[in-house]
Image (cartoon, rainbow, N blue to C red; front, side, top):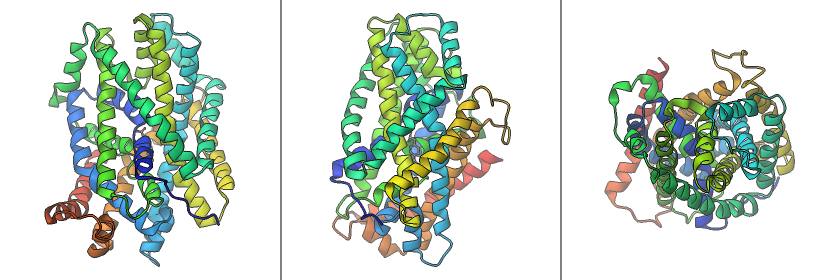
Length: 447
Ligand code: PFF
């Protein structure tokens, strides 16, 4: 078996975690969920979930990962030997597999659209033409599959290079670029004439549209966007040295991700309203609406290149974290080499990815529980598997681990001095608050 790797620095851990969190969830999924769920009310509920749940669940995943120094399955085996807890690890592996299967399809669209922007294909300001362009892009039986494969191979190459020389090295360069680009696009969007309606949509809530489904969507989005509940943080946490600050890293990751979601909202919604488009376009929002907008702006062609490049970077820094969950599990539990583990997982993901991609066209009528493959993988992972994974993590840390062990890990063996209040608050959020909120929303949403 290979020697266990680790991150090179605290900053490296932070950018890797933030890189995992900030992704298509912020730039592609969040805006269309906000649009289809009525705007500001959804955002407020989303923020409440982030605030209530993100930290306790992140702490728990971190504690399990770092204390055990093992993959998601092995971690529970180390901390609770001879119990059934290790099977929880399989929920994470399955969630990661489901997510990356549709994520790589959208990742492929981002490369495709980046290519289209570089070759100046968004010159028309006709939404029908752009709508058709998107439709053709995603429903074809060949083009999206090729781009999906390119995306997967790029992901695999980074993961192949390992933690410090792959994941850490690339995210360190890509994340700052991403931040600068999103701010540039947001500034342009907010300064368009007529953008005020978009700001109102983002910040003035109408709670009459809120249903159980809205709550579940917001919960699922919070989990999805923060990459919690599928073992990413547990896996990254297992490569982190004892001296790093769990509370600080978690809070910084959650803040970065939330800030990004809001800035992404500012980059998209004001422009959508300024051009009189419906915000409830759905998943096509960034791929149809934005090219339309770019086509009409001065320097729009340049902004389009920046924007789709940014989408691609955001996507790949997240997909590597999904792949690492699966790969580390295979390496450590089945004694595979990294190369074999990656080859095997990418092969399975390719099969699932092809199904997800074809479900946009040829296989549109093949349904599982009423969903096509793409929506099935998306909805079951975000709305069911991730909340379940998060639930198990907090239950494990709050109820199965001994409190002194939890505190020892949380404080890096007593190295970090926290007030009694902060320690108690964090511990009881893990033990009571997080599991109750997740259970209630999950059950009510499913009913
Ligand atoms: N957080 C990522 C995003 O917002 O796009 C998606 C994601 C990454 C989900 C990694 C789950 C995960 F393990």
